[in-house]
Image 1 (cartoon, rainbow over the protein chains, first blue to last red):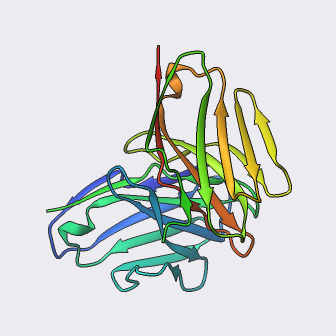
Image 2: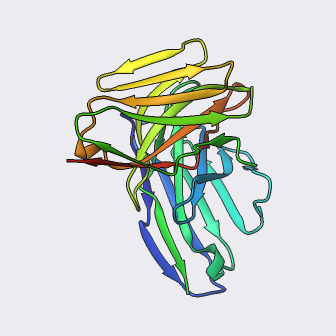
Image 3: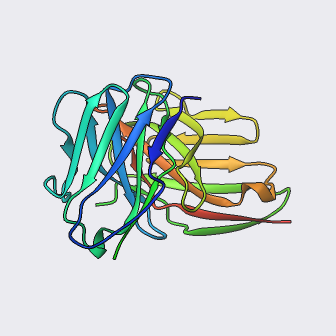
Length: 115
Length: 112
């Protein structure tokens, strides 16, 4: 199947700093990627849809100024958590789809810990 | 508002028996459904999917059933194996977009 690579897999940062997470589609072009967040023992919550060459579409309740998404190329989307706080600590996962009505492929996820 | 729900947070099954995982959804715009398997601190792994034009899809030991009128789908694993122990998420995608919405997950334990 298609491969989606996410980096870094783990990151620890200090409160108030910003952290960037990268999501790459390695063997296909993804005009759309998706960012999810998972709290311990909870579901994956869709945060936003990242659109190549245009602004991301955020789900209700997700702060777009807090979670900056950039999709500068067909193979790379980035999520930047700005001015991180301990409550931003979570597991972040990206995904991409080859085409409509097919499965989505997921990155390995990033464990963010804000101290 | 949780549009996709899995009401059983956990399930234990004896090895060799059938595992049945259930999922309910509320949005009638959903027309493509998937099941994923997930281990802690890893991304989900795709298992099987079904589109709304079908009511059953089978792939090896995994079968997904869709009941559109009841807005319900289920995943059957038979025979269950200890390696199937993981958290299973159902996900749904609307016909208006490409995004997926996930259920709350069911932790399956297959007892040897």
